[in-house]
Length: 336
Image (tube, rainbow, N blue to C red; front, side):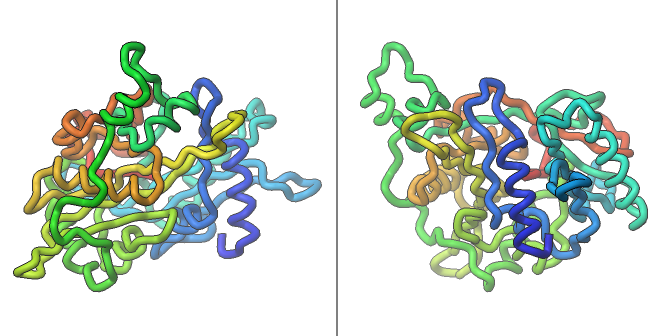
């Protein structure tokens, strides 16, 4: 993944063969910039980016990835990896490549004396450490209805639907602004003071690691802080990442621009006010929908800000680590 050509190959494989919805209407469209961000954090190892190529032409037909992480489960710190992007070309899915990829990535990680992993899946595999549910907040109701992502209530006209989800033009909290490099130490402290209240969370051990994951990158990651006008203290933090989906076989729309809630901390301001500003900021960046899981303290704002429950569930798994089942509100890890 150090060369643009390799990133392009992973992009092509995921674009054509990764997650689709059950109705085959949408498919995740990870950008090259997103993949570079997701797979190359500080301390990443190239041999944890595992691919399978055809013998004849060298075409990439399957992949799986791991990145280093420090997970904390019930107050016990676990050197681990986050597993992601398990993908097999659809024509090869009867060849049982996935178990081979999983065994090989496990072997490579074990060679670095790491024995645990965190991963997520939409399907249930015995036995999840925790279960979460997706919620969706419409930012562009007209487009979402046109592509079939949302349905208009039978007794509500389109104009009324648009009015229902209308947001203010600009953020309402004074002092909200994009995260800068100078903010990194204070913002990391704010987040790391917040996360230990959960039974499962990930540590951002250094300013370098935090900067990689949260410094804004156009069309990848958007992070904002609230700065107190008098004390200049960073009091609140919110972030979301961009993961568009290709709209399959639609005559008008080709892309659904989705923002996904990442890590947020409501300090001085209420959750509803902070996340309403996040919605406004996402809408102003051109996103059509804002997605969030019901983990951490997200249930504090989902209902009031008119998020609707989605069909999808996301199950959290811990490899080689046994613990009591974790309530969704006690999960403090967001995997891409």
